[in-house]
Image (cartoon, rainbow, N blue to C red; front, side, top):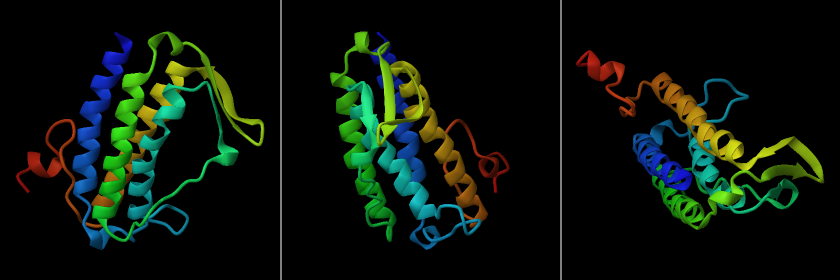
Length: 167
């Protein structure tokens, strides 16, 4: 039952993520609001990459970051980022489908060189926070970046300001 709820939210929100990524014009990919922040392209790539973490989170009890290679891919075109998103999305969906609900209460940990990156906690907390909420947070950042470049963003949870004002 919990798995079905998580899968339903995942599928609904994946469509919102797709709409947001599709709204990025190539001309906005290099924009960054401040020098130390990710560009639109880097942020969109990170959002796509988070879907690559579902299997290790849903179907393992530990994740050693030392051996993980973060591949932001070719971020010179939105179509490249979307292709990465679609590939990782499919893997994430399969990870949820093959997961076992009785494992959701297991303690899950993430380490780097054997040291905890953050305190171990129940896998369900990691699923909601590290995966789901993490994506929503970065989508919000991406929306801010896109608006700062003068681009319109799609409605995700009802009309955008521009839509409500018929702009």
